[in-house]
Length: 458
Image (cartoon, rainbow, N blue to C red; front, side, top):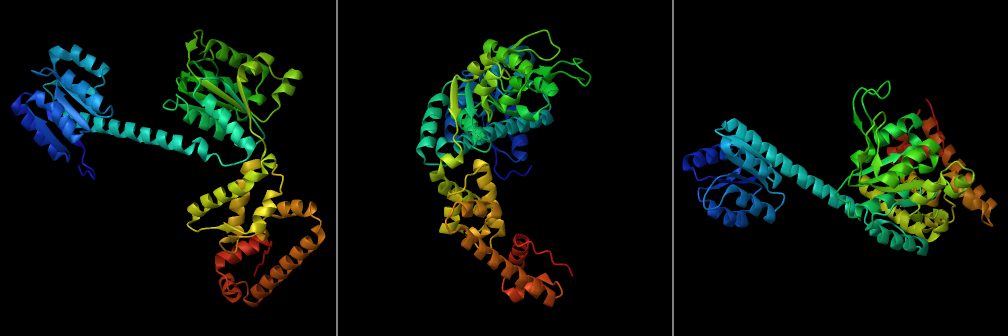
C-alpha cells in the first residue's frame, strides 16, 4: 500500500504477542503505527500524536477499551475506533458502537480481516472530513456577503433573510425568473441550524403532475404500473434538513392539498401506502407567479398560501437595482477571467450601456451576456461593440443621438465585414493566412467572423 500521507494508527492491547503481530502487519500496509501494552498510557499517546484510528482491545486493566474510546472521541470526534473483543463480550462491543466506535472484530480473527476493517475505518474518516469540508465550502459560497449588490433594496432583503435563516420558519421567495431565488434559498439553508443536514431541491414546474407526488412523497411497490420497488420521496431524503420547492405556483390544486397536509401535520404518506411517516423538514418555496392573483382566481389554495407566507421575501428585478449592475459586471468578469486564465476588463461605455438596459432576464441574462461578450471580444478589453444588437438597440432607442450612433456602428461593421471577405478571397479561404494578414490570431478572426456573420466558403 503506497500512502502519500500515512494514516496514524494506535494499537492498544495487553497481550504482548498479539500486539507485536498486529503492529508489524499494520506497519507493512504502509501506515504509521504506534502501540502500547499499557492501556493507561493510551490517553497521553492520543494527546501527543493525533491518531486517525485507534485499534483497542475491549477488556483491559486498569483502563478498558470503552474509556479509551470515549477519550479519543472527546479529543477528536473524527478519530475512528476499532474495538477488539472476545466472543463473550460482544454485547459490550455493541455498546461501544452506540458510543461511537466504527466497528468491532471478534477474537480470534484473521489478519486479512483486520486489514480490511482498518481500511474501511480510514475510508469512513476520509468521507466524514470530505463532507465537513464540502459543508464549509457551501457555507462560504452561500454566505450573505457573497450575494452581489449594494442597492438599498438588496441590503434590506439580506438583513431580513439573516434574521429568518436561524429559525425553522417556512419561507416563500418571490421574484421574476433569473433574480436569484435559489441563491437566496441556499443562503438561508447554509446559514441555518440545519446546514449539516440535507438540502434537497426540486422544480415543481418541471415534473409532470403524475410524477410529482411520487417524487416528493415516495411510493410503495405495486402502487402503480412502474412501481417495482419501494421508493423514498424527497421529503424523507431531506429529513432533518431543508427542501426547496421551486415554481410552487405551477402545481395543481390536488397536489396543493397534499402539500398543505405535510406543512400542517409534519408527516407524509407515500403513494399507495396506508401509513403516515413523520418528517422534520424546513420548507422554502419560490415562484415567479403572482400567488395573490392566483388565490383570487381560485387556481391556488388560500390556506396553502398563508402556510407558505410565514416569512415572505420578494427579490426585486435587476432593472430596479441599476446600481448593482456594475458590481455584477465586475463579479462575472472576474469569474470568467478565472475560468479562461486571462484578466478581462470592461470599457466605461460597456458598463454604461448595460446599466441602461432593462434586463428582462435579470441576473441570469446579465451573466450570459458577459460570457458571450468575452468570447467575441478581440482583446481582454471588453467594449460596447462586443454587445449583441438587442442590447445596443435598446439603449439606442432611449438615446437622443440614436440614429447617428446606430448608423456609425453599421458603417463600421460593414467595412470590417467587407475587408475580411476581401482578404479571404485573396487567400482562397485560408483562415490562418487571413488572420496573419489582418494582424490577429486565428481565434480572434473566428470570433469576428461569427460576430459579423461572415460565412465565407471556398
